[in-house]
Image (cartoon, rainbow, N blue to C red):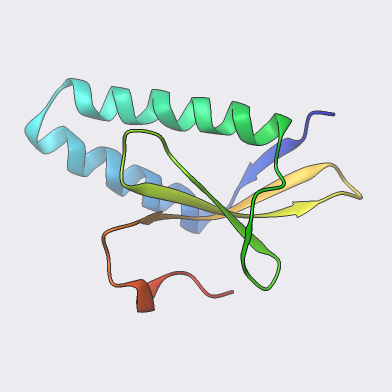
Length: 98
């Protein structure tokens, strides 16, 4: 079963900020980040049941980049709501708590 991915405004803003940050030093880095993100979405759509990190919120690391997607799976609607794209090197106390 393939799940539909819905990205929250917060997560979208964090993704845009990450791509903008990578564009400061490189032309290729933001493109590679967005490709890795698209690959993560594909994996997530097929197999969303990763470890629960907090209450019902799950996380999946984006390969080759220090970011993780925090998301919630809704089995009734077959949707995945991406809540945040969090940089893994930041203060863990600032990790999203919804």
